[in-house]
Length: 347
Image (tube, rainbow, N blue to C red):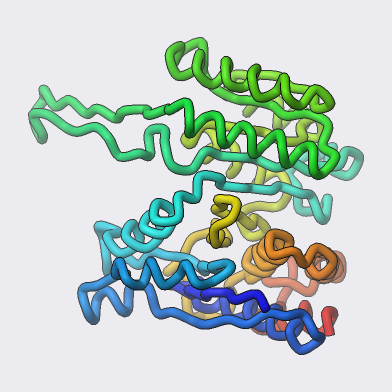
């Protein structure tokens, strides 16, 4: 029995998570061994108690096989203290060093590219998730003066670089992918670039059946728009992976169809749609739940239910083809109706 910790979070996270859980319940009713428990980690609890998530609660999440997070963020907490405590707390507590961001074109009509109907887009981005400029090292001197200095440190360790690159090659090998592309700015950041490129060559040599190349991040951003079907698996430092994964999502229909996973093999992963909490439309019943539902498919893959994951993706594809979606994707349904169509297809 796979146990899933469900964290609806804030804003539309609550609404889209409700539909994702309905999908899980539909599969469970058909015999898939899944169970879930909901946790109230979010702005409401933080504003009520002053606590976002405790150390004991973080440790308690380790008893689950996976965690599903709807979205975190609320304008009533302008410093995002609760969001950092929950999201970064989980990532760092479980050392979830892989941010897995697939970008797969389901319906060519949703891509801004004219060539999308002719060339398939199926890219998987491995973003390093615990180092880089997001490690939080740096500071500000002479604040609020004309002489202010702001420093952000870019942290790259051999251990961190090696394990994310190795994960990308293992994924490519396991899934029959033809090429791994490293992206960096080794021309402008030679110290970090030298480490990434050296490790990329070392690890790649152990996987001779997978082609490899290194491309500067700016050149890759240009080429992803020109010919995205050329790319297969991309591995990137934290910052470049963050930027390029959103670009890749835009090419296949936007963040409303973008699932993600935060992983460390052998530990419970954190799965989340990446569209954010969208407080401006929260409570209106118009939030698009498909990214959350596609995230359940990604979670099912990692839990060992590959056939069920493909069924979920197929149901989403059918809904898109029939226009049975929320208005942002060209349909006229609400959040709950869209989820209901997916569940009906599964049942």
